[in-house]
Structure formats: C-alpha cells, structure tokens
Image (cartoon, rainbow, N blue to C red):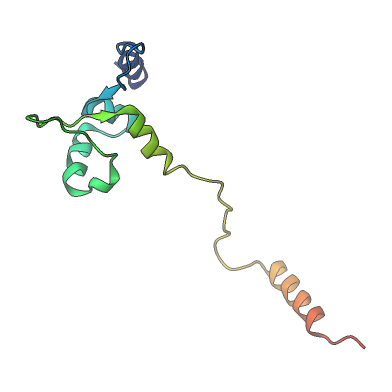
Length: 110
C-alpha cells in the first residue's frame, strides 16, 4: 500500500459528522511527515522539537497526534520566497560596473 492510498484510507475511515478531530498514531504521522516510523521514535526521545506535540492518553504508552495540530505545526515551517544569493566572487563585469558606479558617485561635480 503506497503512502497516498494509506492517507486516503486513513481519512475515509474517519467519520466527519462527529465533533471529534481526526487522530493518527505513529504510522499515520509517518505518512503525514514522510518520515520512517523508526526515525519518529528516535526523534521523540532525542530531538522532540522536530516533531509536533503528541497526546498520550492516561494509562497508555502509545502517543497520538491530532491531525489539525500536526498541520498547524507544519505551517509554522512554510518556506517563503527566498532571494537566491549568488555564490562566489563577483564576475569581472560586475567588479568594473561597481567600480565605475563608485567612481561616478565619489567625483565632486564642478
């Protein structure tokens, strides 16, 4: 079963006419975050800041995640448009243009 069909089956199995939010376990979270289950288990103890907050019901060891909370957490890390920074030294043409621009600004007008 691929990830898309798993997510589809996950949401189709939930009844949306209830007032309860959809909840996923670690397998559902691994599909939503596109991470392996083992990586999520390791991150829960070593790097908990890299995962959305989990809910652990009393007398259980199994963490659960509310899908709305996961989506809200993911939206905090949306990439905004980045201006690409050119790597390396400026080209010779850029150096000459910069020099001529500085020279024209620094020369006093008569």
